[in-house]
Length: 296
Figure 1: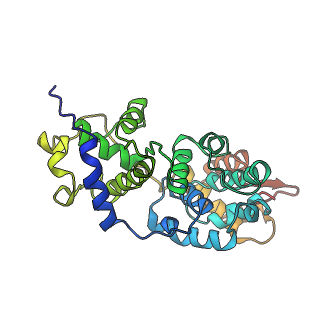
Figure 2: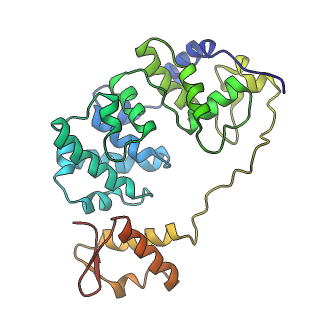
Figure 3: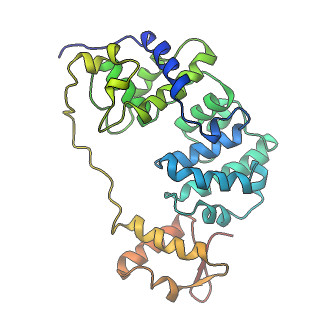
């Protein structure tokens, strides 16, 4: 196989110039947003598009502008406010992280990468993203968009591997500018390029600032030849059943009877499985007399 590897250094200036002109105006990117705003956005943006996140994000920061505000509430209130963003365990993890920030760091999101990584719900990606976007540090921030941009521009393949790999991380580290401030800008700029131009299905190569240097374009834009990439289904799944049950509990101001939950999903076996899963995940609390509520 012919090597179409490109040079990371040649990508920095054109991508950063493109970002300066084309970056979306998003509330967590505003100069005064602060580390907590960045952290909330990163939790919400996992597997959820920006347009769905924005209303929930604004409501969340209006209600809980600091970690101490969220930490003082019951975890069920975080689940309620999460509404229909999906993957509601993220709400519980963000609540637990807020409590840990209050207990360990005086209520301020820590700027130390290791301390961030030690917070509940904060993994490798999220710690790097907060350290980079909130504190301007030099870290490889590797989400799906970044993986795709680097796979195409530097290795000449149409799509990165289905799941993140150690090789993806090494490639991202090799592409980091040496200067800390520039590296932080590169992290968000390369992510934005993947979100707006170097998209998964219909990349806008004609609008790309690195088209002339992109290894994939120079190789003739060969099609993806890896394992099938199946889209996620939702209709009729346990996830949908869980969402229906949570919607009833979110809307209730008092504990909900099991008989009321039974009306929101037709398949009794799937409904019971979904409810058991919600209880096991800590998203729903069972009470006496066959009643349920969000966690108190």
